Length: 308
Ligand SMILES: Cc1cc2nc3c(=O)[nH]c(=O)nc-3n(C[C@H](O)[C@H](O)[C@H](O)COP(=O)(O)OP(=O)(O)OC[C@H]3O[C@@H](n4cnc5c(N)ncnc54)[C@H](O)[C@@H]3O)c2cc1C
Image (cartoon, rainbow, N blue to C red; front, side, top):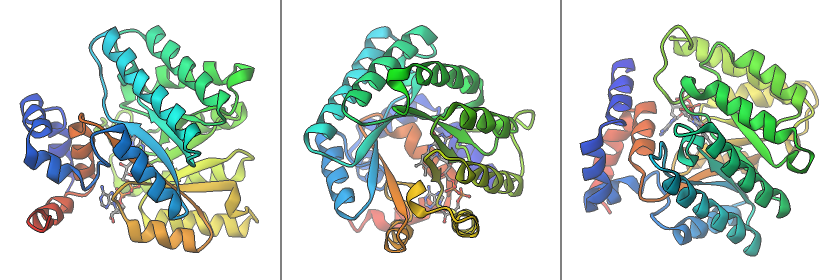
């Protein structure tokens, strides 16, 4: 399985395959398992239906690693339109943003300026910007940007971050973020990382996930636990019960199209659930990371392919 995971992550960087997949009708059909559609309206329609099922949403306009300032501003424009639509339609939704899509690799100042504008727009309408976490070469700069923006009184509570339990550094990052009052989404981590920075064994990643989720639950800030792993969810629920932490003080987060049964069950049990809804034409790297997490999805997709 680790070999297959590495293979899919390597494929997620394959440009010719990406070009072919994103432009073929077969690719579009297959991607619809994990991607809400190609246009903003598709994503808003899904968000409405997820809200009707008692769950909140985080909207992700797919794309990463832009190569020009113009592209970065174009990507940001989509998010501004999303924030306006969320406010107009009174959706229970926020946005998830990758800083490389906002030009981080061209200039950290460019990405910070764009994130600042988005957080201001979100703050004005009572929404929220979640900055996704990408590979470990970007962890520090992402943390620095989010902490600087969050320190501004008008943006307090309007911007949050993601921490990955596979990184050794995450415990101290979480201590700092809790001290700063910054909302965290905890996930296991979706990129290929070397053993110098990340736990190579899944058992250690999982143990760290449980340790970090307890730290987050114990803090007075509203955090998100992003996982489809029932044992992680069980541990979090048990810790919350033992410590008298009300379910309204945190949320579980899951990806669109993954473990819908579990999403519904948690809602029925009275937990907050937020569904991460990705959309857009640049779906290929996101889609390959989902296959990397569960290579069995390939068989699942193949079986369902002819049933569309
Ligand atoms: C809301 C949300 C936001 C995220 N944001 C980020 C981010 O900013 N940065 C980042 O690095 N990663 C992010 N991730 C991805 C995350 O890091 C993991 O790669 C992913 O969630 C798989 O880990 P898991 O906790 O679900 O458990 P795993 O141990 O990978 O899986 C546990 C079980 O969950 C189910 N499962 C997991 N993944 C899938 C799948 N793709 N399809 C079907 N079943 C599956 C299977 O039953 C599996 O046995 C995010 C995940 C979520 C849910």
